[in-house]
Image: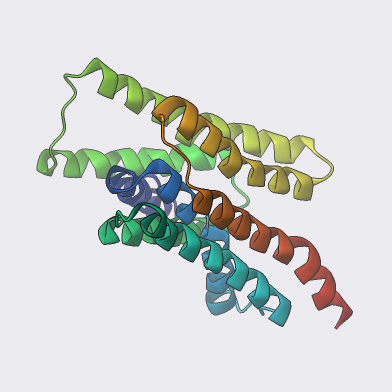
Amino acid sequence: MFAIAGMLNPTMYYLVLFKSYELLPAQIAQPINYMWPVVLSVMLAIFARQRISTFKFAGMAISLAGVAVISVGPGQLTGVGLSVLGLTLGIGSAFVWATYWLINRMNAETDQIMSLFLNFFFGTIYLLMIAPFMKIEISSLQGVLAAVYSGLFEMTIPFIFFGIALKKTDNPALINHLCYLSPFLSLFIIHLILGESIYSTTYIGLALIVGGLLFNEYIGKRMSKKI
């Protein structure tokens, strides 16, 4: 299971996600990837036989509408079309991530940090195997520092802190919901560091994506229990 999980994350997930970031503005790729909870809900319904209520379908539709707004909106505002391959990879990364979490559910009894170590141990082996067939340049200090930054802040520290937070808290639902702040904070960082002008459609689409997820977490669950 850890070997399979390592194939999905970090190997496939980050190769797909980083290529999507290369082809798209960061403000487009990041929110589209955030549709993975919707994908996970569908996969749980298919593979784990977890029923999706009618109200949850409504929340999923709201989130997917947000993805559509983000994908189509910039072209309407600026007249510049987005990379179809980049959009496809961005959506594909959400599927890879959802599959990874589905596999991880089977390893739930293993310590989270040990689980993360084993996933990345196998992922490192896979990446070393395919490295000779890829164009890799490590002569640039900026590139090396970017890789170190990604390893620390994209892959390691958040996973560890999130796991510790879940162990320390008496309200794990609150910890999960605080994660919905991350895409909005990301827009601020994207604007500040990368200098991207954030499209109004990105704000609207991201609000729809997160709104749909929160709808499912709060309203959808309560209404389902009443039926």
